[in-house]
Image 1 (cartoon, rainbow, N blue to C red):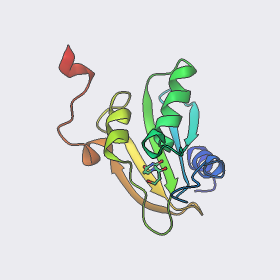
Image 2 (cartoon, helix red, strand yellow):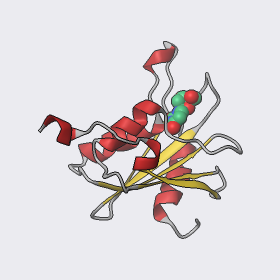
Image 3 (cartoon, helix red, strand yellow):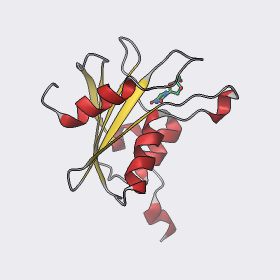
Image 4 (spheres, rainbow, N blue to C red):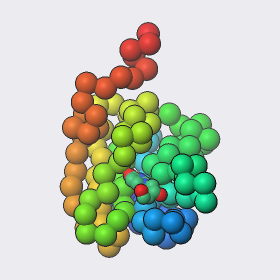
Length: 132
Ligand code: THU
């Protein structure tokens, strides 16, 4: 994974996670179809439900930069177990990614733990097309 800039971005941003309550630091990076990479970390809050996930931060950075189309996501978090996106984040990714988009979970050291497609993680999903 050393050579993968998306994985490196997820690992690097994880160091900035603000997770004093769970002590569970997560970094996520999205790669857009035009090759740009945006990263985010989890940001917890003393009012616990107000915390935000790493994936949400990465998506917000992408949209703020004017990008809209995700090709790939890398999530780096937890300890030995793959940190798969929570249900809400799966739906947030779905807004900007096709079903075949790859979502890779890596360890804090960069080992690839598991790779799924978005369709694996969120089958038969509801997306923008459903409103058309
Ligand atoms: N978290 C993420 O940032 N992304 C995930 O994919 C799963 C969980 C965060 C939320 C919370 O700050 C901490 O990890 C423990 O749930």
